[in-house]
Length: 311
Ligand SMILES: NCc1[nH]cc(CCC(=O)O)c1CC(=O)O
Image (cartoon, rainbow, N blue to C red; front, side, top):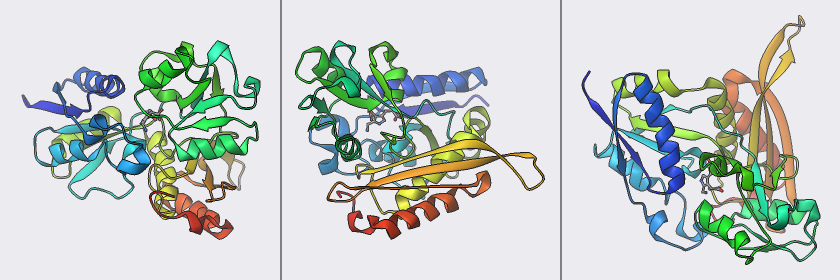
């Protein structure tokens, strides 16, 4: 097959780094690839993500893919809307990066070392709600921009700290600037944080098979599927205050044999910023059911009041 696969990406440093790893893996598998940069409205606007809406970074890429301008789209999975795109298929979820959030603070400080009143930048209602819940008296301020811009606000002294996805910092080779990795018990990441979604057209069977066999990691896919099913069942968009993290864990079956299962934790913030938490374990092959069951539990606890994309 002499076909050259056109891989579409956003033009940010983070997107290019992510796409680079996908391109290299496909090349190593013998494919011919070409990288095509697509501008998205999310890259052209400085408005808060909660205002410009879900899918600002991904729909232009998806349209280019559906219109045959590219053959493959590489997304940060957590930026994708929960509704599937009927024109496309997620052919691979590559091995996920460390999903945790990370703190970048001045003078090497950790969260616990920041004094009350310290300014912590984040544009994410999920991060803000969980930071508030720590009761440290931090002053949480809105923040947008790419990873470099956000870390720059700490370097310039404008902010005492920022919270970002560790995966984004890692993909840019800047983990040395992290002053603390935030454990899921204090800061549950966004559903699918640290994972990529590699999409192709639904009828492009050749591309789908190549991408799937070269890049898909079944454990990462199962974890992300559970987290996103939870989010979808809460009818909450990507900027809503919902965190979820699934891990593949060892368990013992009735005969004492080791089996692998999926353990899912979820958090949702009410409008009063109270955090509702739930967790459950299920079969690796029933990731969606696990996510939906956990969402039902959160809804029982009172999360219903927060449904809607801008909650
Ligand atoms: N919302 C923007 C976004 N989309 C994906 C990442 C980081 C990488 C990832 O989670 O895959 C980021 C930056 C951040 O949240 O700090």
